[in-house]
Image (cartoon, rainbow, N blue to C red; front, top):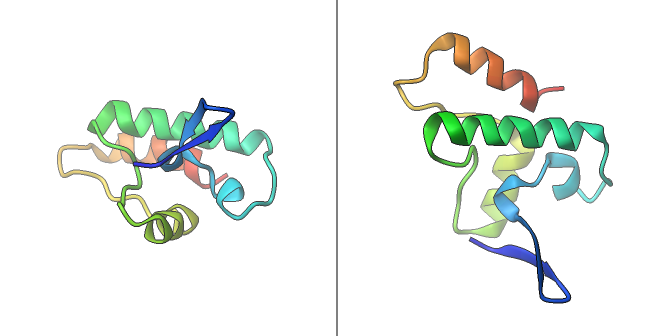
Length: 87
């Protein structure tokens, strides 16, 4: 997966970008909350919420925000995590 590098410094993984960052609308506090949701999703499932090797497809998935959960994830957990993605 691609990473954003500035002056050869790793800043973040593209799969963790908030939708506003993908749309180049700046960063607000909601990007931090979105990031917490990404971490929770990854801790629960072992995978990032949105994955694709194609950058254009990945950014589209992030913008749409449709989460797909593995079958082992309980409904209560799904509800809790979705809150972080739809602020």
